[in-house]
Amino acid sequence: MSRKELAELTDIHPQTIGYIERQQFNPTIELALRLSKALGVGLDAIFSAEPFDLLDDKVLRRDLGP
Amino acid sequence: MKHSDRHLRRLDDRYFNSRLADRLQKRRARRIVFILSVLGLIAFGFLVGFTVWSFIAPNPTSPLEKLLSALFWVAIVFVIQIEPLLVMSIRSAIAWPGQPYDERQEQLNMKARSEVRPFVLAMLGIAILTGLGMLIAMSAGFLPFSHPIYGGIPIYSGMGMILFALAKNAPYLLLAWQLPDEPSDDSDLGDDG
Image (cartoon, rainbow over all chains, first blue to last red; front, side, top):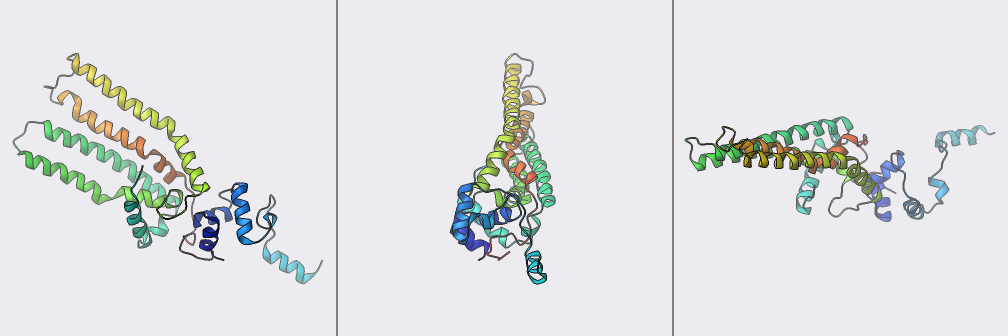
């Protein structure tokens, strides 16, 4: 899904998505819920107080085992 | 500043057809636009003062020549086109016709307006108090109209214009100064970034 499509679904400016991704803007809970609904995932899948693991790290851990 | 939808649409087209688009997303370029805008507003104030002076000063030129010379100076300011650059440089922070105006933009604008309020009040206060002081001085005979500076009217017109213009544009100027760098792929053209 492109930023533009997500922005249209949530009725926000496309550049706001970029600001949220770069942590230059913290959305209100209302907007966070709209984004979560539009993406079809839970709120905790897109927002977290702790930094998310990089995808590379997850893949490496899976491939190398515990 | 309040702009018409037509003016903004024209700027929108110009933005996407401009090689400046990427550059204006960088903080450094925005700060250059900020400095140019402030200098442009000051220059505009001086030109207003000059225009007023050219109308009231007795000189051998005809009224048409005076009018043309005034229009010439105003035209120069428009040719420089600083104001569109300022608007385009804060594109991500202001409302554009046909595009959503969301909570981030609202928050940025409200923050900018509240931060510049003391400055705006100071500018308007100085302009009003200086104007009143000038009127009192003129009516008391300290600043006669027959004086070579015509009671200070041209100077006050120019300075007043600078103060009002700075006060009016202050939120946009602050946004241009404060907005962070935006990656060049952070456009609203539908990229997947």
